Length: 453
Image 1: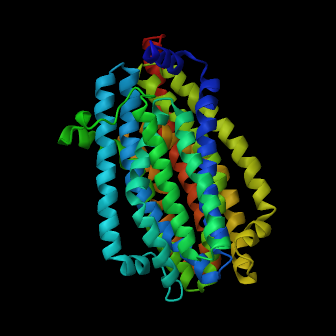
Image 2: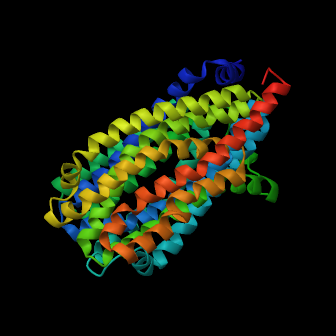
């Protein structure tokens, strides 16, 4: 009866209210997650500019961990939502357990390899000699949290794709609040410096992991993390990995682009690295609004596509697009006109503020083009269109951003670096249009054949 009620809610409840119900907890989770990353930047920024630059460098490491976590999380979650839409609970449990234990194993591998190669890894990610001591200390703490961070991504996404976004929110927000509290305790009260920021993040990651795991232990879900359901065969793992490739491409390229951005900005000193890192974090805070509502749309798309209710998929896409555009537009304009104050909060250094203002303002303009690409990425990944999802998710942080960054920095220097992300956002949005038109044309024909769809 519990499973039937969940199925009926996902396939019959009015789409706008359903997306809002699922999207608001996810938005809150995204806001809090981004907020505690910003809290690290704020407290570390009180040390000096080199320490502030270290958080920008380690952002590339975080992207690597998230790339693996989201690959297994979105990969298994997308399949799970469609299996539940088909009422195939046994298969959904197989994918949830396999995704979780695979992510946990990968997290331990990254911890070991990252610890051995810590110094060259930080240099590769763009650390300068003055930033390196801070970056190594902070990164080691993040590596210690790698198993929890990677596998938490899986649990979080399974809960969301099941339509249990509220439970996912509890786990993520609890860890985020604790992280901010520990930042203040370790850095301001105990004077632990950047080590305190790293420890705060590591402890909060394990707390979130435990809370999310509790949801499965208490059987709040249709899926299970019991090891007996895990199947590490080519078929199951292959499905998860290929479905999760868009997330791996998106986050993996984000790590590469962060590395290239830090190296390009490093030519202009530690202040440039710090400024671009702060601008990216503030932009990501705004971006989390579109990402949160987009992730509320994902289980709706997956469930209803699996149940062959194509009209609800279309309705969900356009509602998410309009809702996300309005929210993102308001937030972007607010930050655009207060860019200097936003940068100053994290590092009160005239040089950092001078470099950060035009970078942040350019990103605010580029964010107007983000909701459309987010809706496309979320929809295609959720319904199993692997090529579309992988290609489109590779554009913003990779296939467009990297060549734009390299060319613009060569031709225009620092100003080119500052506007590269905004240019990539515009190009990505335009590229998504033909994919969207083609898909909705296809499902419109299916609906004509069978009006019930």
